[in-house]
Length: 333
Image 1 (tube, one colour):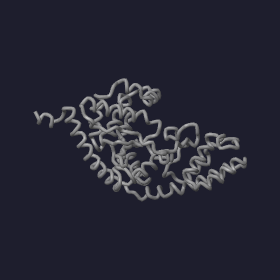
Image 2 (cartoon, helix red, strand yellow):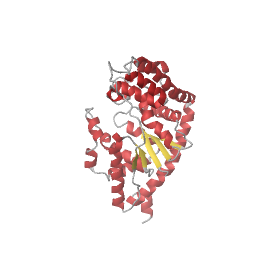
Image 3 (tube, helix red, strand yellow):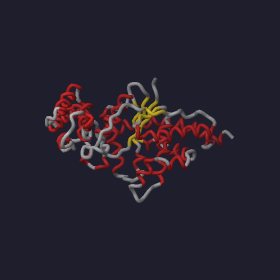
Image 4 (spheres, one colour):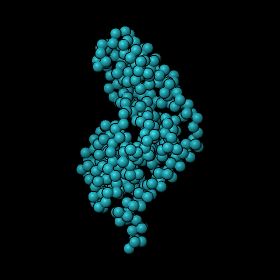
């Protein structure tokens, strides 16, 4: 069954292999069977810092990276959040619907607020904007990891509460699309999820120079021993084998596993093999990205915003009618 699918990604620097294998690869697959809308959420990016010079460049570069990864503007809608103003308009309506208690229970707010002396109101209410992003397009499915299910549950509660308040079943019941994704850990600290915020040594960018990527991979943490069974692997070795499974044929993975189980020194060869198989995946992405020009990406985003805006404007016209605001409401008196 085909669904309308929505997902957003912040323009917070280069996409890394954790993003690709954990989410974007699945976004590409979903295009085959579903009505997909993918959004670069630049308003979310300013909840903690405003960088007016860098942000447009990051949004444009991210769009190019997504296209190079396989997001097809002919089969999906790709656009920048701030180019469709209805996102923030619906967020205000939802701010009037969501409860304070719901927002205080959001674990990500608690975690992020502990990392800074200054806590903006937007950091507290950004899950409301997230709900607006999804429901503005009346999406019924959102591809998420298990760590994001709490935010999606808030979206469901907001949609239900709005429907109850206006006496309508206007917004659909949103369900998580728990598509198969891989949790890729940091190369430098495999006890932590790969993240750009940890620093350059911890992640490998999808368009990173092969020499720089190999330097990081060669320095990736393994261990000083290792058990005879796969379950005894250290986090670092397990992370390398996880990446190998995503990029190499099964027989290649089994060959390295046999060497590992036998106790043979093989980490150097494992890293070289992983480098070669990663390059088979990342090389074509890097080539497609290099061929994309800024003007071409801008046109794709402009077209995507127009297509998204047509859906969003219809939704907001109907929401205004249901709430009783807007010029049309006065005209009907």
